[in-house]
Amino acid sequence: MKRYRYNKIKEIVQSRSIETQEELAAALAAEGIEVTQATVSRDIKELMLIKIPTGDGHYRYALSPEENVLLIGNRISRLFQESITRVDFTMNQIVLHTLPGSAQSVAFAIDHAKWAELIGTLAGDDTILLIAHSVEDVQPILKRISDLMKD
Image (cartoon, helix red, strand yellow):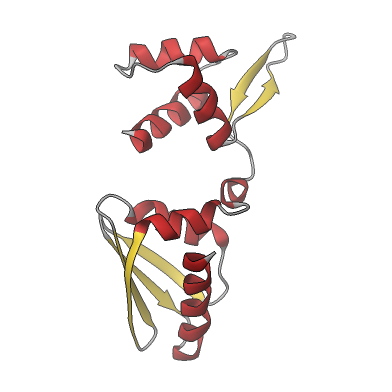
C-alpha cells in the first residue's frame, strides 16, 4: 500500500499544483487513499519532495530534479536489507531474489546508482537480472551488493 501511495503522490504532484499537505491529503482522498496529516508529512519527507515557485508568488510540491537524491545515505542499504533474499550468479549475470513486489524498487535503485560495471537490469515481481559488462565485473558488483546488505 505504501508503494502505491508513493506512486500516487508522485503522479499527483507532477500533474497538478499542490501547495499544502492538506491539499495533498485531499488529492489522495479523491483517489481513494485516506491518510492522516502525519502520514502525508512523513511521505513528503521520505520522497524528498521539494517546494518550487509557481511564478505567481506561490509554491508547490515537486519531485527533486535529482533522482539519485532518493538513494542517499542509508536508504539504499535499508532497501537492500529489507528486500533482497538471495543472490546467485553465473558468468556475467547476477540474479537477485527479492520479497514479492520489491524487485522493481531495487532495480530502480541500482539503475539510478549508475554502477559502471553494469549494462543494465531487468526486473520482475521478485527477481532481478543484472547483466555485467564482463565476467570480471561480477565480483565487484557482488561485493557492493553484499556491503549494502550489511550496512
